[in-house]
Image 1 (cartoon, rainbow, N blue to C red):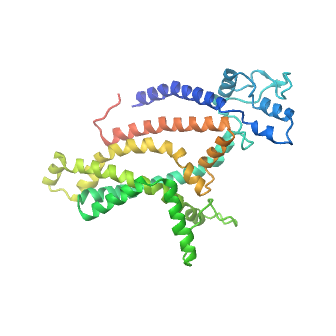
Image 2 (image 1 turned 180 degrees about the vertical axis):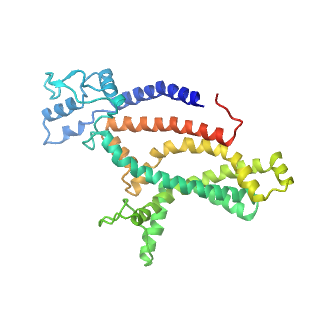
Image 3 (image 1 turned 30 degrees about the vertical axis):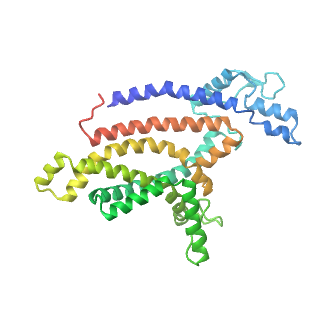
Length: 343
């Protein structure tokens, strides 16, 4: 397994390099991030030249990419835009942990990520815990009551939720649990931010602010995951080894949760492993609606300028997450089914 993991990591390196080159080139073609200064009467052409020189935007594209990759502290640079070399650069490059400087936020991308990524992880982890728990319960419940009224109701609700755009579901939840509850004098839920703007940063406030964005994301995921679990459980519970377990007199609970669920979880592992990395981007709409200060809102702001270093780092972070979670999925696969070997 260790050799297999090392091979997967080595295979991912050229892929990440290709992704970075493609994204870097596309961001260059997207336009000048300081074009807005031409419309600002307070900004002089010298100011614009200074900003372009600061971020190295006047260098040829290959030089910009190499600088982003390995830094510029090894070569002389024009830092003022006057055509004269002023001194060595101060960037260390992605390979040495320096993701560059964000044009939108005026600080390093590392600092932006260190502030925003934990907020997104709080939202993501909570949403996935809720999703897995409810999807397992609903999927198993529906599979054990195949074609009953309860199964048909769950199927209908799942199809409705799965067909619904996340922004529409989020707006409906806001309308019901924030607006209507408040109009009726009932306890209402907050609809923006992570904490009370009056300064209450307690855990209870965080939980209250999490309910609506987590419900918006989890409801649609539960609808999809529960259908996968139901279908795989139906296949497994009709298998010969399950019939053998019943013939041996094992309890139905032991058969369901110890024997059937373990094998039925294999497709779910792949689905979760593919889904989690893209949740970084998938939470963009939800974070925007609920003003959640995470990576999604930072990515939206970066696209408007465009903030090339932040966008490239965001895309690469997602690509690395895909590789990491695929390796984790392979490890979980071999644990759930000992017949699977990667050596």
